[in-house]
Length: 374
Image 1 (cartoon, helix red, strand yellow):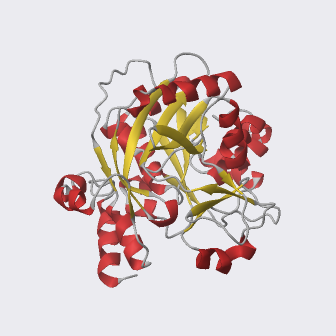
Image 2: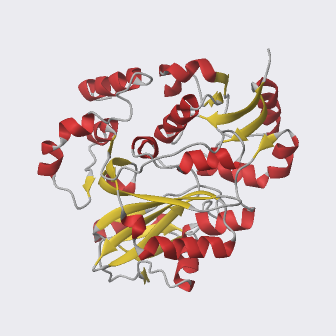
C-alpha cells in the first residue's frame, strides 16, 4: 500500500477526549491518522476513526520492539507522535534517540526540562524563583488545617508506582490515609479555592508563542477531569506573560497547559501539563490556533490558517457527571452554581464532546451506563 508523505501516530485509550479532538483536527486538515488502540474495548473502536486503527496493544506498557512494529504499520513516511499522555511522553523522552532512529518525530523538549515542568514540585520551585505565586507549602503534624492537597513530588514514586494529587477534606481522611502520604514522595499545600483557569500555550521551535485560556466551571471529584468549561480572555492578563517569559527563558518548546486559580485578587499556579489536555475540543470550537501552529511547526500543514478567536464558547462532557454519579462521587463547581448549570444545560449538551456524528456511539454508551449504573 502506498504511504502518505506525512502523518501522525496517536495512542488511544487514555486522555480520550483530547485524542478525539486531535483526530478531528487532523481529519479537517486531511492529515493521515495512524491510531494505536489500547485494547479490544478501547472506545476509539466506537467511532468513525476505528478505520484508522493500525494496531491493538497487548500490554499497557511500551517497548522499543513494539515501536518497530508500529513503524512497519504506519501509512506515512514521516510520522509525528502526538504527545497525548504523561506515561507516553516519559517513554518517548527516555528512548528518544532509538524512536527517532526508527523515523518517528518526537515533538518534546529535552528530558531534563520536560521533567522540570511536568514534575509538580520542581515546577512550583521554578515558578517561585520567577515571582509566580504557588499555594503555601505545609508541614503536617497532629494539628493542621483542612482542606489541603497532597501532591506527588515527581511522576514516579520511590517504589516505582505512580501517584495522583489527593484533596484531603478532613482529619479523618488524613489519618485513614496517612501511611500513603510518604514524605519522600509527597508534599503538602494549602487548598486554594476561587476561579479555576487553564492557560493554554504552544511554544514553537521558531516564531511567536500562541496563547489562549479557558475558565473551568465543573470538574470531577478530587481534581480529576473537567466536565464543563468555556473559552476565556484571562490569557490577556499579566499572568500569561509571566509564564511566557518563564518558559522562553528556560528554552521550552511544545504544547503546555498551566492550571491557575484566582483567589484574593491574585493568581496561584497549581500545576503544568506539557501534553494534550482533556477539554481540547475548545481549541477547535473556539477557533484557537494551538494545534494548527503545532502541526505547521512540524510540516504537516501549510501556514494558511486564519482564525477569529471566540471567547465564551462552552465545552461539556456529560459522561463525566455520569461517571461520578455511578461512583457516588461529588462533582465540584468553580465560580458556577447548580442553578446556572440547570439554566444552561441545553446549551451545554449541544456542545457535548461526544454528542457528534463521529462519536455518537460513545455518547449513547455513556447514557446506557447512567441507566444501568455500571
